Length: 220
Image (tube, rainbow, N blue to C red; front, side, top):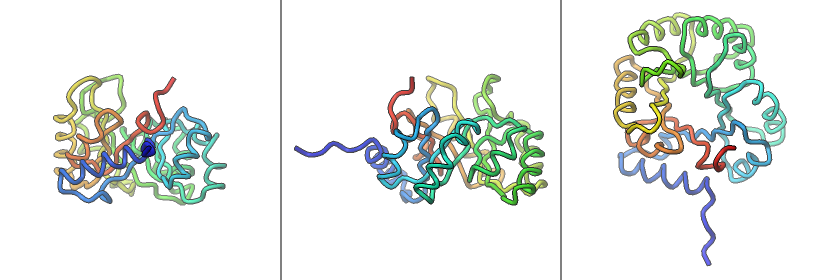
């Protein structure tokens, strides 16, 4: 009897298929395994399979589990995918290799100071409030250009744009809009797509997909 694919193998195969349909290389897309709320016992099997890029949404939770995992497993890239409080900017700058949720001038200022203090320039995505949802983080589309300029003036390395489309709505128009906004502002990176829609995101140009439950199982 043929052994069933692991969740990681399944997600990888789906990304590869979406890339092929879109005429892209698999290497064009980074899979960020969203390990928030999962403990080390759930994370280690993915590391043992060879996966090395993970995402967390809380600085304190990441501080509690990743230093030990990195000491044991080495070359882990850790991404901050949740909303970041300005008073946690220095901790984030010291711990993370990429920040996906730069969304306001006060955070630009805090990260600029933090990067200087810790001696690291951490690449960032600017999060866009693509669905005009007040409860979510993200800069309003009409304020995006100004925030990009502020980040560039602060010497913050910008990878691109990030979004979380509204729940239970067809995501295609939102992904297409984010792609256009990035192109209009000379940014190449697109952090978009989660467990329910990452294949669509890949077909529309995602460079980073943020996948949690499809890899780890449903959260409590």
